[in-house]
Length: 146
Figure 1: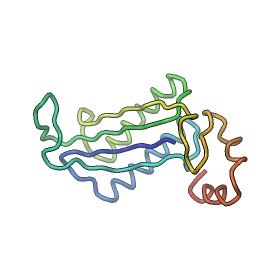
Figure 2: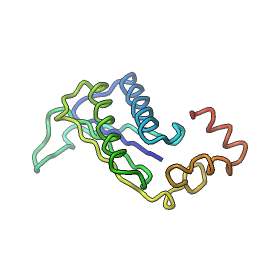
Figure 3: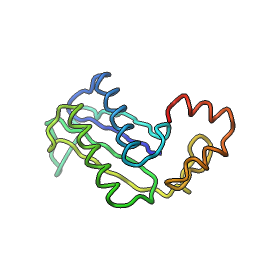
């Protein structure tokens, strides 16, 4: 956790933009929440042409949506900073106007998530969780990030 899904509509993101967005989203999540970078995954999707509607009408202008599923338990101030910093990363890397950017954060109880084969820890208990992992998995995660 977190899993961030980026959906772009009515424009393309090139591979450099995707890389920059993935790195930026990961960094923001790490800096703002303190969660290890190896928890963050970013998945990209693009809507098919004519598959985006708002108010029942086809949307023609470019738009980008970020849906972040994160572990519950963080204070409102942290989530406020997270959501605004994520917005800024998207604007910087997509070159879209702020009115074309949507960011949603969904809190999920850590006890209802499994990653790397283990139930996730409460926020702030990552070191204890990590210490109980197999040596093989610790090595793998250490290669992914901090």
